[in-house]
Image 1 (tube, rainbow, N blue to C red):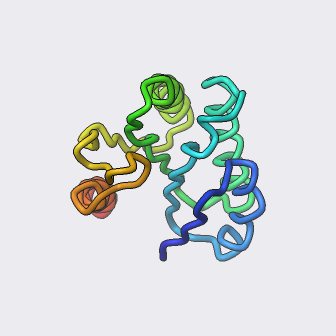
Image 2: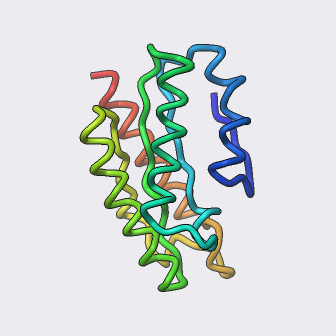
Length: 140
């Protein structure tokens, strides 16, 4: 099952995730944080908010395996710099908590649409491939 919440912030997801965790999913991939990059929050605050949401998932559904997907490439250099900082912190948090961290390093400017905000077809394929590889690794 895939659920998308376009435009949602991490704070918004605290409410949106509860009906999902009630179903006690086996695995959940959190791909969040992009919409928070423009906020006045620091990279540390954004990463901690994502971790808090993942902690909420674990609390509401203890048997659910949490994975966090890295924030994708941004064309705007200041947003990409902030995203890279968030990703570095998230990776560390994931390692410390035993969660999987999905790298999306194969997604670059050539994977974004003309507006530079959303993925183009190549980007969708790359992200899909990253998730498929992650899921396959969990099954083996």
